[in-house]
Length: 122
Length: 191
Length: 223
Image (cartoon, chains in turn purple, red, blue):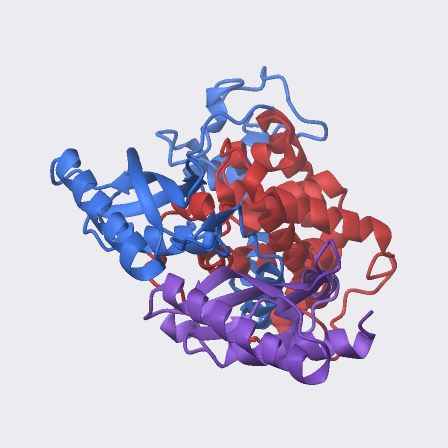
């Protein structure tokens, strides 16, 4: 059973890989954090990038299923960026698992939650 | 986090009813245009209803967020503006009932230093008159206050006031008349 | 009270629904506390006529000293009302920002649509796709998208787009709809990477020419 640290590390690896893909503007904040922010909105609300990633054990315990929710920038086809995110995150996680623990299967799903116009991007 | 500006493209020339349809489907930029268009008059309304700018900002913020959440159910039977007025009026009335009135009823009608309604551009006398009016407004019956503000400050026709308050035009006219009478008496010394 | 008319109209003149305008002392006061002026006019009607109604042909209130005094009695109140209306609320911009922060935090995504990838692991939120496709429709002159829904079709990655438009009437509608369909299909392929099987378009509204329609500025008087 992975420790909490291990899971957090996975989220961080996935987030870093996703954010490095050209065309990814940001990760979609986690639902729980969004609701908290909505209840008490503050201007300085910063959420860690890992918030847009969800990591679950596969139902039969063999490996991980990762969901990446991201916001893209304009200019490239969303499908192509999503593919890159899928591939890079998968590679990064497989490498991480092989290095720090036993190699395990990883499946990655990518959901594009928004496409920011040029003038909107940070 | 994305830094978002408040200036959507291609949206500013759309009428409210198109923006509403888009926003109901989750288009935040269309909602941002609606917020820009209507916040000034809603804020003025709330300030008159509540007597201080902080409460007014909270009321209008709550009203817009409530509108965003309920947009998918909004049935377009009233104009968006009318709907927003109604939400804002209801929010203000809820806030008024939950909090103690901002002024005791025996307050002398003189402007305090740094009063919420003061603005540097106006003369002291103008400030005093406006302050007296807002005190007089605070003492009106709820229904009369709403009708008077919507008519005299917002400039709405009777029919729209009736829609906002969910009453009939005769009721609106009656409340408006009584409000005018009361305010005339309260402002008597200022003539 | 059912709301059946989406368009605001100026208020009916006081005479429209009740006693005739400018009637004599035999008039029944409609409101508690109403007053009959020495000239026979009802105070409530005098006030309504002065500020709430479009100008009427009735010239009595202009010359009658009692009516004029009644109108003058509210001058201070109404001037203060205008001052309240014209005050610039300082917190406007910050308010709009706070509202949009919450709105974006509560973003509605809609259903998830498959992007055109055989692995089916890549999806896009309906609201994100709809926004791009609406913009594609908006770029066609004389056309503005209203609703835009995307629905998965079949078992694969096929998607059907259903859109309503507001269109100007300066050119034949079928031609405009055709242009919009082409623009949407192009954008779906180029910008998103969706496999769109059909784009159903309905013109549901007329696009009016002219400057930005915004909220009516409040006026102190009628209409």
